[in-house]
Image (cartoon, rainbow over all chains, first blue to last red; front, side, top):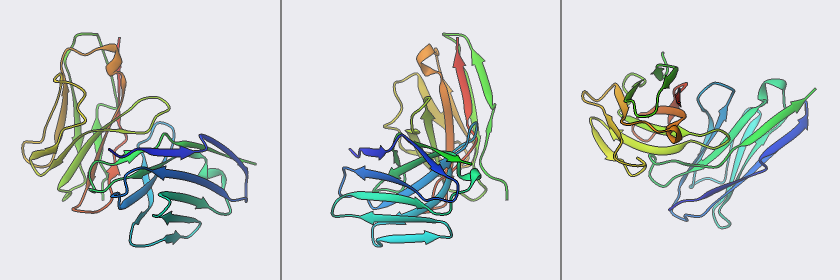
Length: 111
Length: 112
């Protein structure tokens, strides 16, 4: 089955700088890669997703890149703001149902 | 419109008791999912419904866990003879066909 590895587990960046979170997956059949943001006491919130037929997708300050050959995908947040502080999860699936999540990255935005 | 809602938000029970956790998906979403999240971990898949039927229940840890969705909307996750190891946040998500999954706030279950 699919296995998703996520790094780093914790990331601290100065407000205004960029943050990058990286993930790898094991199942070459995976074709859908969502990213979720989870704040304390809340459920995960879908912030962006990418399918395997594209290599990059951008939505304002958030971008995702996908390298299918290397089975890597990354989340990039530019011009970080205090409200970006949260736990971020990458995930992968080939069936749009049984999503396999990484273990999460706790992002701290430093003032 | 309203998002996914889950009740109760918190549930404390004693070892051996039976619990039911409820999920109200986003209106019109045909697919419904249950996940379990332990502290410091990502959500772990339990079961997936397409309409009224369980399309994939491979994530249910054992036969103490059961879920239903009798009318294709609200779903109930049922746990019999609860154990301390069942303590976790139980998350529900819904989606429309092949759209992204949208999560509820979760039910925090504590088994004493």
